[in-house]
Structure formats: structure tokens, C-alpha cells
Image (cartoon, rainbow, N blue to C red):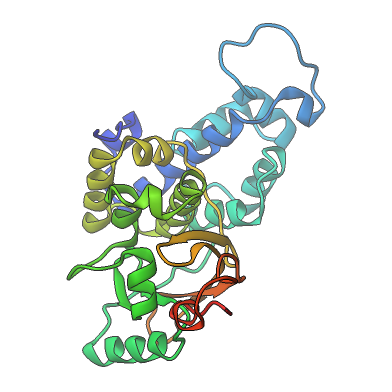
Length: 289
């Protein structure tokens, strides 16, 4: 299924224009989720669309309705951080969402990812192998798996010559059986990926990857159009292991200073289904037997 293209996306071309178009789409999506009662306005009555009206957001933020309309249309290229902060307060954005808004508007320093040299890849491999028997892997900004230890490969299905975590999660037919909480994990992954990719919209590889995932997975396409963002550094993950049953992990995400734009993901086990399993099998994924 092809992802729907907004009118803004049809007419914009530059990365800056794409970021402001995404800013408008993101704010419109969050506005649709806020009820009048949540912001102290009278409810009831008939509304054509859910959520707040644009003029209501503008009134509560202390700005003109036309100016706020321009923001949602991606036309307010000189919107100030103070105005964005006021809008964020009205829409009850959390910390990750506020950072996303400020980054799209150019008020957060952009990260400068660069390709990893062969020496960097070897170092990434050394780091993830050093976490054995626990699963660990490194992803780049496209969520390509740059390095993974054998525990992560076996546990998550990160095999193949050029694995990509999102392709594994959405296009691998075994993913739903591998992850008992797949629906939650899929939504979390898309919201994290959108938060990280907002600053390089228009990148050809990103555009191709999002299109490829959307063509192959209706669920990804639907999640992508929701414009949700999150930053879950210590999020939980449940994996169904063929020998151990369901095992719960905490995902620890660390930015790698030696490889800008790359993240090291460590899976720290809670124990779970390992109690009745042989110690060597449990230790194969770092689970205390």
C-alpha cells in the first residue's frame, strides 16, 4: 500500500519545506486528539471533526488564527520558539514531542550522522560482542543493523546480509509470532523512528525506506500517517524464544559518540521463562537460569 501524499508534500521540495510541512501535519494530528474539555472550553454541540478547532488553539496560545493556520499549512517559516512553546502547551505535548517540534522548526542543533568506516564497524562488532551473552546490536539512522552479536541475531531474527530492524519487524512473516506484544512494539518503533528521522526529511534513502515499508505493510502505512513521536530509552520488550518461552527485556538505547547517528541497543533480561530451562540455554541470551 502506497503511503498517502499530502498536498503539502506534493508542492514542497527542499528539506526545510519538508520539515515545516511535517511540523504542520504533526500539530494537526495532535490537535485532533485534544477535546475542548481538556483545555477548559465548553464541550457538547456538533463538531465536523474531532479535537480542537484551529481558532481555538490560536486563542488559547495567544496568537492570531491566521498565523496558526499558516503554521499547520507549513508556511510559517519564521515561527518563534515562544509561539511553538505556547502551542505545545495548549496541545499538551510531552518532552519528546516538544523536542520534535523544535527540531523541525530549526531550534534544536541538528545531528550530523556520517558513514561508519570499516574501523568503526569493527569497533561496533567488538562492543556488541562484549555484551554477550546478552543480546546487543547497533543501528544507523535508517535502522539498518550495522552490527549485532549472535544472541541478538538468534533472538530477533536479524539475519541476512543487510538486515534492517524495521523490515524485520513489519515485513518478516515470523515477526508477529516472535514478539508477543507485536502491535505495541510496532507502534513504539514507528514513533521512535519518526522522532529520529524528522530532521532529515527529504533524504532519498529515507523516502525510499518509508515507501517500501508502506507498500509491504498496511499497518506501517497507517502508523506512519498518525505522526506520533516518542523517545523510549528504557522501553520494555517481550520476545518469544523457542527454547525459553517468553522472555522480558529492558531495551537500553545509547547514542554512539564514535559513530554519530548510530545507536547501541542493549537488551537486559528480566528473567521470565528461563526458570525451568537448562542453564546453558538460558545463558545463550543472557537470562539468569
